[in-house]
Image (cartoon, rainbow, N blue to C red):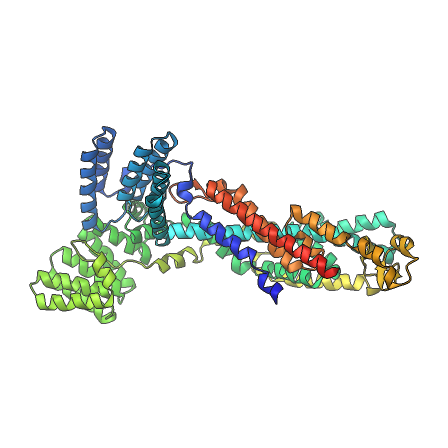
Length: 623
């Protein structure tokens, strides 16, 4: 029981370390550039941004601060909460100042970036780093900003998507790398036994060298007949299946079953790499976060056309028109949406908001009440009905609606400070559903990847792999009889079978080891043999130095060893490819700074400690 509890102790620990190291990515090592066209901003924000830049370049900081305050006031009335792209430019300039040692300027730019995009974790992480470098012996403000950045990141879809995606990539790389090492160990340990078995069966026809050529040809046959290279792994597992331990067979079976289910998990896996290519998802995420750059994305999609039946895009465009003050165009989009989903409460609330802005208050009341008829627990509609009732001087009704909104969602009411009504937006779960929805791009890439590995099979025919593997195992069982199934010599590991093995008391040995120990007749004389048997533990320790967990296969703990191997390869992958694979949207940065690198080293130290602790314990149990 103790062994089963500690089996997965290291793997989850390394996974958590990988996720935590990924979070402060954008502030760790800035190595990219951020640029954008002012056309990506609302028209009123274009001039304000240029004016702000002019004031800052002329070192008129007070005037620049006044411009920023004016922008924030206008943004609040328009429903915009973040200007991520301008904030990214300021972070870039702050990084340049940081690299040149101008800490005061870096902190100032980081603070302005946070002012432009309060919900963006990139600026907060940079500001925390700059504050720490500015006052290293007073880390409390920097730590406060750092944890604030974590909090902002949890509420940021793309931040969480990239962080979880990195973790998934680390886990996948660890499992794949662990299996490749596992497969190589199987070939090194068991291919000589297969050759011995075949030689015993075919000794009248082939010599030992010819049998080796035959075995290697069987292993590499998929490459010779022109099928995908993935079949090499399947043929190798089939060839050595009879010689594997129970735990090794479990690992191999799980791998084959996973491949046979590729049609189900491969498109989902590719979602982590293709989601940011979806213009619809990018637009929706910006709308939900109140990013000013959503305006440019909406313009682009509107110019492309073909969006009349797309609910989410039409909804985003309507919100954008409302932000830009184009109420008539926003109302037109909402009327298109009503034809698609006439009973959507959030839609009815937003139509009421348009009428509110157009000062058609009675029509606004009608739509708010229709929304509440569909969902009486909608705090947003209650709050908006309170606003329009005040405009109509119905103060008693306004008070009742405000109390109802506070009773349903008090934090919402307390946190909203805008002058107008509240729009209903998509929830965060909607973004995750769209990110993992089926798409032609993911389907095509999945089919291409699977086809390259297992040609001529198609992705839909992936379950056939399990059938082919089972047939291969049964076929080999018929070719290699039990009489000639080889095992390893207890003293040197050389392949022996029932036909050629020798015995020293109850110990099975090869002929060479038997000749060296044939004078042993009593169990009290077995001390020298016991010492020679320790070679397996010495080999396990040496191989574990280079591949932690590989030695577990030699002592019969295959499943545990595979977990350690996967953890090791995942951590190594994290270190080697951190700058190439791990990037955040907008600002590119390496996942690991110096502190992250130390954390990975700590994970490796824990891994090695657990591995050698197991090997020492197994050696004592054997003794």
